[in-house]
Length: 256
Image 1 (tube, rainbow, N blue to C red):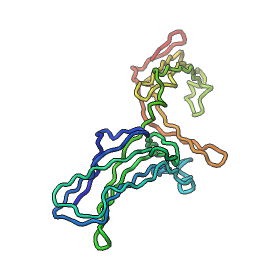
Image 2: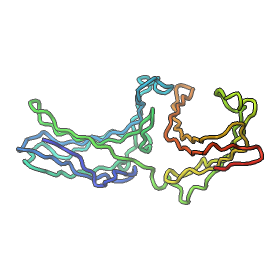
Image 3: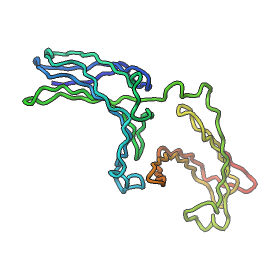
Image 4: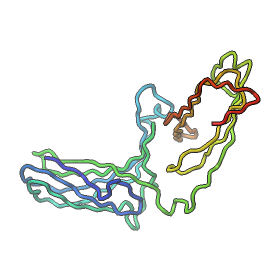
């Protein structure tokens, strides 16, 4: 015996003001009786444990309670019987019921290092005390409502930065401490998630040969604890550019 939830959209992406439709699919070797089929829809913001040494945010796990976004139950069928073989039972529900005040703002689905925002639909086919209930769960994705999205493309905002031996907090080679280096550039800090992050890097001078350059994309997550904000960073992606031992001279610039 098996049960599965199939949503009408293969990508499982919805907006808060839309209707969610799908089917509960059962595959049975023989017919069974049930005491009702219910669909439970839940969504919440949670802290999660990622393993390893506990970070700043993870240390508050168990202290900060989850934020409930959505909690509703939809009665799909009253008590009855399900035939043997494959049976498809349709269902539908509104994420936002007209006139109903939501428990919390509908945040977008998010799976981070320490924080997750998840929307789940679970089906429960109750079969009484003598038989184990049949259940299944599927996650669906929530994106921002259309009226909250900008009508025009986001104009990039470029931030200028520079790095020298004096701006570094980690230990440096003695040659770099004495000879120094300077790297300047600019990077786009406001862009759409569907667009690439663009920028420019210029090596103005370096006392030692350059073998490679790595660009790290970090995720910053923050939570409010009392009157303080706890922030944790985690690595998402590393991009590396290789060089054949380029020697940069103060008079020659190298752009990447």
